[in-house]
Image (tube, rainbow, N blue to C red; front, side):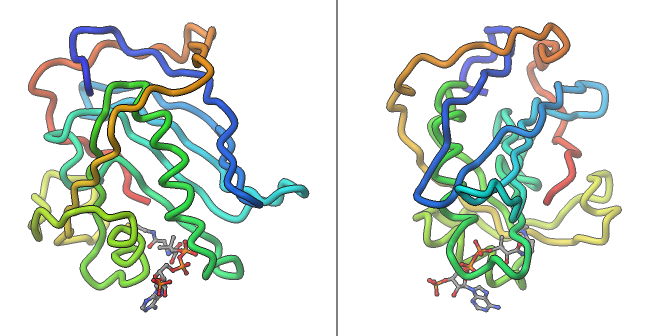
Length: 189
Ligand SMILES: CC(C)(COP(=O)(O)OP(=O)(O)OC[C@H]1O[C@@H](n2cnc3c(N)ncnc32)[C@H](O)[C@@H]1OP(=O)(O)O)[C@@H](O)C(=O)NCCC(=O)NCCS
């Protein structure tokens, strides 16, 4: 996280819209330091004006060492709606939230054989850090994944325009992640 000293609060995101694509908050998951989970936003990718759901996105807010394997962002676009760079466009939209949490770069990871995801990440201008073996203690390993390409995407630090509200629900507030948090075992999407 950008500032480990500040207690974490989810924000109520501003409208995240790019043409027909709208990214809608679907839920938040607090950190679970015992399991090594960092706080996570879940989104639905929807189309305007109908609101039809065409995919999903997750944004994890945490330090690089917690997210080397799952990455900060996970995404999926339903097959009939692929081919419009929706994942790339949604990634760009959610950077507005990441910046509020003090992040100036994001880690993006994918299976080396996942050409569509790899291409999506490369189109964002992310820089390849390397190919990493997934350690057996990672949840992703138990899901059968063995290696990830890890990229670093610089997102800058331009503050979010209209100032975001912190979500009022106390349940949405998670405990402060500890320094030296274990690598996250958040599911990858
Ligand atoms: C990854 C995914 C979200 C991309 O969906 P999308 O945003 O609709 O992406 P697009 O179909 O517009 O393709 C993005 C780029 O990948 C390329 N691409 C897509 N499928 C490809 C394939 N099978 N082979 C080569 N390139 C491919 C496209 O040509 C495009 O690049 P270009 O326009 O520069 O040529 C989608 O494929 C998906 O949901 N996959 C399953 C879930 C998944 O793998 N999630 C990522 C986990 S890390």
